[in-house]
Image (cartoon, rainbow, N blue to C red; front, side, top):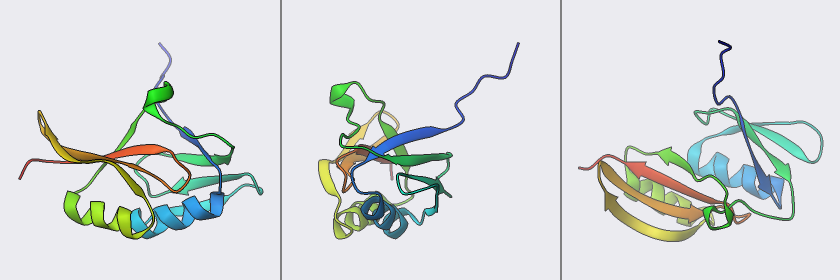
Amino acid sequence: MASNKINYVELPARDLALNKAFFSQVFGWGFKDYGPEYTAFENAGLDGGFFQANFCSRPQTGAALIILFSDDLEITLNDVKSAGGAIEQEIFEFPGGRRFHFLDPCGNEWAVWGKLS
């Protein structure tokens, strides 16, 4: 059987420079540009990139929800707010942890989870 596993994820971004600045500031990601309409992210835990598009990725429209991990949800929540992200759902508990949802500056929805204290 061939090795078949998730290897890469691509997400839309209305403004590549804005999303690069946001994810660099909040999560420390690096970026490598491949032309004016595509940038790959680095040091994100999963390989992927943003492509120039006039739409966004939201679970409500059938998109997958990408969930990041944080050792301190409150600090990450404040960092997201400070960098211009919009909190879609404040911190809540679920079986096994806590998380919050946010929209990046281009309108894509993400979640961040952490372990219960």
